[in-house]
Image (cartoon, rainbow, N blue to C red; front, side, top):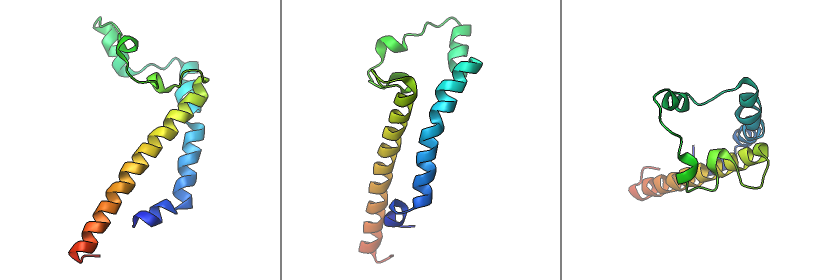
Length: 107
């Protein structure tokens, strides 16, 4: 699969967008309804560790949210940002590999 065919894959982009849209349903709404907590957080509490993550957090996207936006919208925004970063890095890596194969005569 070439980098260009990945970019043009309507099915892949449709799945990604649908997953971004429904992600708040599972990550914000339903997790709050059932009282879900991260297992690592529960283990830390069980051994008496204090949560200082909000004090030392350096990111504006703490807990998958965006300051000033509702949790559901922030969840989608941070998900879209994550998808964009992964896509850009992956696309760049694929272009480097394609270029090296062309230079080596393997394409």
